[in-house]
Image 1 (cartoon, helix red, strand yellow):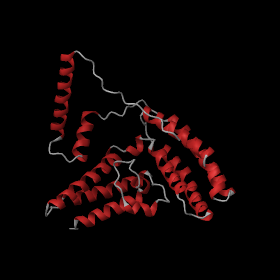
Image 2 (tube, rainbow, N blue to C red):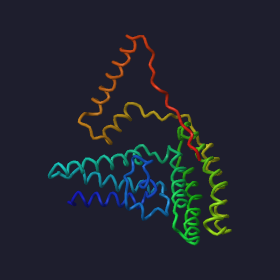
Image 3 (cartoon, helix red, strand yellow):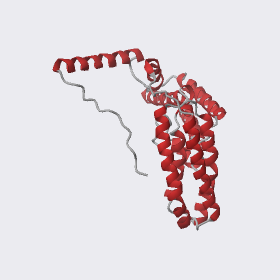
Image 4 (spheres, rainbow, N blue to C red):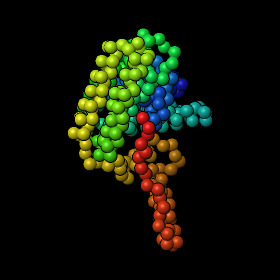
Length: 276
């Protein structure tokens, strides 16, 4: 049986190699931060369904291996608990909940993060910038095409947010990328042409996304919440006990509000448009 440190090394290396963009960003809470991802940031995450299933199974196997380990001290127990939590979050989101089938914003964020990385690198020659841009621009159209194939009845609000993000991405590629190419990549005609191809890919993505929207909501329900709590959280109470505690707290709050004859002042959640 492998040492816990070797299992952890396997896990972080595997995730960083196959999901570099998501493992390099705090945006994706169910992915671990992985130093290995830095070596693969010139590639977009491969979200082809068959490969996703293989990778989820690989992490399930690691999760079983970690769960079977008997810690020898408190430090090992802490490491084991944190690894189980991280692995369980990924298995839940990508395996059981299949976020890659229901969240169209995922497919906007990944290429935009990769684009931002290329544009933010300061000490590269025009030839190096050209190579980076061509590598990225070659990957984005098939990535967005795969996205439309992957998505299955995404929630309407998710589609609306993704469409707004994609419009911003298209505007960015139409208005900001060409001047960058002219300044940093020697006004290379091939790169400019590939950039136009990416813009067309964004248009196709938006068109495809608008055609597959559904009226679902994000709500996972009580059973879903129990599952999330059971798999992802390390907590000394069972999911049923946590839900019961939450229900009691909610009831107490309502009783206090009724007694004071004051309306609830809970703030409504809203989406805030970010500047492009």
